[in-house]
Length: 556
Image (cartoon, rainbow, N blue to C red):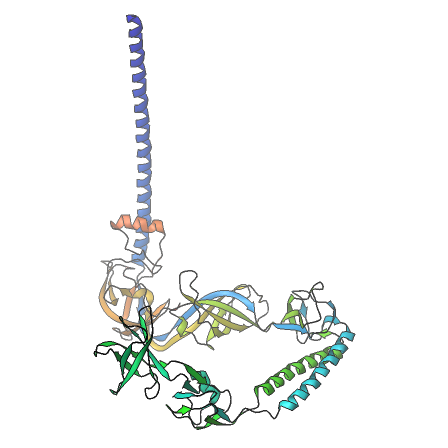
């Protein structure tokens, strides 16, 4: 038993030693791997540091000068979009015309006079006869209605009190209606009302209503609902829209508000010019009482509607005559067939039918997205430069033809749209990408310098007018005031004179790894917000440092 126990203890000790040896091997392996990774990282950082230092060393040697001089500077609104077809024409056939066959397909080019559709001539003759009959019937109705005119007087439709008069002698009736919604307002139930926020009042309670001139009227509470109390007062005397004060029997002020007509009636009209105004404010009128007399009254609305209906029938009749003369539906212009709407299975001659859509290929349009800071600078009629790289390296000239005032916020950024139209050139196809530049502002004879020569701190803009080549340091710092700016140049409105020289280096863009290495090599972290393509924020006097960020006047 003792021998077995000794054997067990020896086995346990051997296993424990092997386990410790294995653990030491794992630790050594991990340490070696970490050391290798650390060495690789050190080598990578050193290489990147040397690379960035080379960049800055090269930049320090490329110090440029620019002589301040007058020039022209302008800002642009830029955008891109795709070419789209404009001025499409729908080819339709009047109701009653049967189609035998439509020949072109979408994408075909047709010339003026080409056959578009073959029709059943018997159906054309029948449609002509029906349209002629409708014209004769309509002529009879027009003849009966031609003597109908708008009444030359406007009267009160019900009894009431005149509380508002909007129309004056010489006013156009329709314009007055559009602006005010009425020519005059009558009070029908004898009351004006005012709404106040007051507590402790109940329906039927008596209150005092004070007018601005100090006169007092007795009012009564009509209703109290959700803390708002409506008080009624006679319409004989007080004026609508007057600001009044409501008090209780003890003289305690309960609230104030503007009087309004409790039960109003709008006096309306739709044609003519006001000749005289018989209505008097606050006067009681009866049903049928004259309020206004009119002149320049027109024919009745029924007569005008009949004339419009006849114009539509005349157009249909001429379309039918054209089809009858040609014996088919022919193209009226050279055009591209944009789409074919005719479907033999669903076609019905009972209604007017669109069979084709033609595109004359004379103009195209591009819709661009515009930032909210630039949209108010755009105006219809402004000239635009358009690049369609798939067609030509040259630029094309277009015009801003439409500006949307409805914002698109679906992306979380407020954007507006503008449409630019240009003459179509050979090779332009719908769907091609186009870049648009619209010049929105411009200044001539402005003192300008390159944007790269301008620096900025929290207090001002400045430039350097000297450079110490031995110390590799800028000198002659001068604060300036800037005006208009674009991607290349900036206007200097004060601080420099014509003939002055500024020193600068062209800004460079760095990759993320470059900037990381720069941060390690310079011994400091990156500034908040990162850097822009115009160069990072570096100490004053160093090449490429202190570039402006977010300066005003940039074209979008």
